[in-house]
Image (cartoon, chains in turn cyan, blue):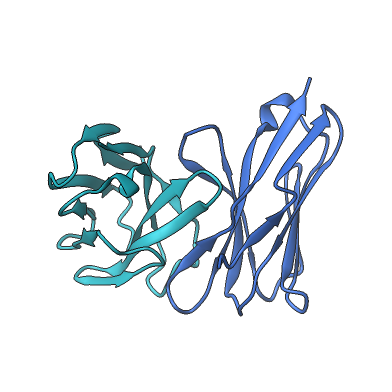
Length: 115
Length: 110
């Protein structure tokens, strides 16, 4: 089944404890992206990747890192999480090489709470 | 500020009525997409309209795009209770970014 998977789905952690949220897609998509969703603010793009080893900042990259060593995986890293990073996170992927011109397929979301 | 801004923020209608949501944006786009989200879940793609298209249909959905006004509308005809969800527009440009609006929450009462 074609899908985007994220792990973990739920995570409660403490300030300063490094964490990684994994994202994997099995559709051979070139474009992958991370978003955070907060009440009243909609979805905001954190980072995106147009291809392997190519990543770019979205609108809210501060406090996050990503890597794209393989086409299928796009992990989101929080080196030193803070309470303002408590949010619902979504990973998404699309076929397009040149940009997000095609349908975005979203993962199920990761609800992160930073105490 | 957000590229896509949706109007209204919330909409409540009776089953069988039509629902119209609007999206405005600020810069040039390659395409505009509409997504649906059921509470707390991942977004599901509904329809994509390219910048050189003016109208597109998919089942009970009709999307229009007016690039001169930098606006789009999503019409859901003959709404059902199952259409209750949040609806987001997203704009794509040559930068590689995909920018979402804040969404319209639709409630369809049975």
